[in-house]
Length: 254
Length: 382
Image 1: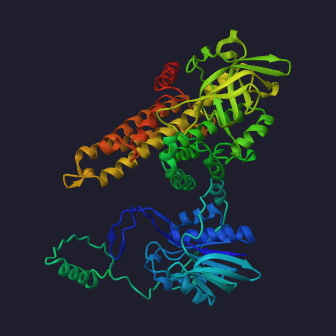
Image 2 (image 1 turned 135 degrees about the vertical axis):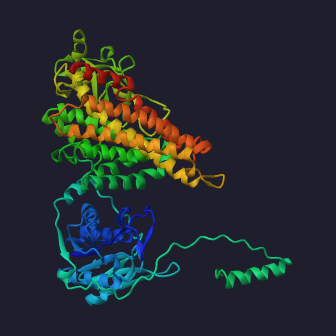
Image 3 (image 1 turned 180 degrees about the horizontal axis):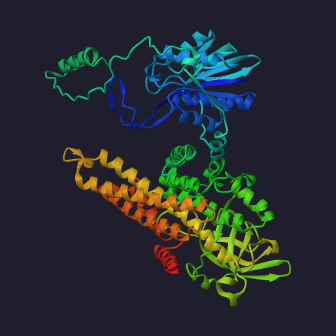
């Protein structure tokens, strides 16, 4: 089973947040593998260990993305594709999905895995759009994959503790639920072995994908923390009624 | 001149850090309190390749150098010095003695399972009356036919209770003083060989430090490790590398203490602001960070020299060990001070760093012995 895993590099969780224009200042921060994608990678590696085949890590972005690609290779991906472009963070999910789809179409694969969403923009759309562009079946919030004879039995997480089992043909695109597995660490041998693995670099232009976005981020900002205290007066009954009203219509929490 | 780590070395640091934070950090206080040797972590350390960092792949090691080894020890020790110490004693003392001075047959039999992490190793040099002074060694080995018979006891042996094999120094020719000491491989379960008292320590409580006792312990002649009479001389070379790992151990704990102090100083509010906004605290943090960085340069310089193979690095590894361990003690002390009352209780990591780091100015040669080694090098060249 040949599996492509789409992996995004995102700002590190402990990176200091400073805003520059309509994005965060990237010059002084570290980057890491998008955590939801690490579960997709782990699932791909486990499927490979069970069914054979190869795992291809696919990532896009500037040169620094190679660090995350190498981590995927160190954990056990067989080879990688880097769609090189300096302006991918400007892209919306559709733009990203178009570039990924163009790269995927050049490969022969049985399964494409993505994480649930990215830890930076968090649109949660790339996997869905990717399936649409590739014209492949798709399912989200995958908790378990049992592959056999050209199809898969999938467990999906629903709301309120419910699960759903579905059957899905191959090839397909799946978005993996975070926490589905325990992600492995890159071992010392894995890190050294990754040095010899292939990273094929393709440019966005060579894939024929436009850098023009179909949506635009107007503004990003850090929410202002405010602390206000208001005393309600009256009898216990009156105060309770006022409180319920405020919780319902002002705070909108009940 | 190059001051950056390679991509692979940076990846290794991140990976060992993730491992330490994921697998070790949640248990650190529990292991420390119970003085529990975490045998359960050994298969995971083995899986990571951390029990055979510096040995060639043909023996199942990771085939890396001292820079990578120091990075691994630093990151483990940043989270728990005890695990760092267990790994350091296993790699650079026991396993390295077999790798450097063992026969091919000994390497196949002992180094391979050690490097693959199928067992841990111990290395016994110190005795009640012989630490820095080898001449006081009382443990003897007498050749009887095709066997050596060992008698005596060793103290302060790291991993003593858990080791599958112990490399032990014993006097084979009393008349030759330090040139009459030889190294022997003693397997766990050999009749007459047993671990003795497990020490109850100030710090590094999750690392096992034990007596090991030899009473008419018979090992086959082929268990002589290295040349007869060269055991102590070889041990000194092993300690050159060992000191780098203790320096890295000290560096990791110093970094851990600095990280803890930084975190606390930004959280703790007094007089309406975080204490990190006060210059008194800022100066402490700046001093700590500068000292840690200076220690780091010495540690990785010594590791780099060790990787050059051709170069001697006795003085540099002593300098790294001396400086990093003294820095670690000072930084851990300031870490407790910044924590104030909370530095004195076990709800915060400060007090544990304070207890653990002290080992580094003592183990594998005290600070004073390091100074002697450094001075000897200086005076010889003049």
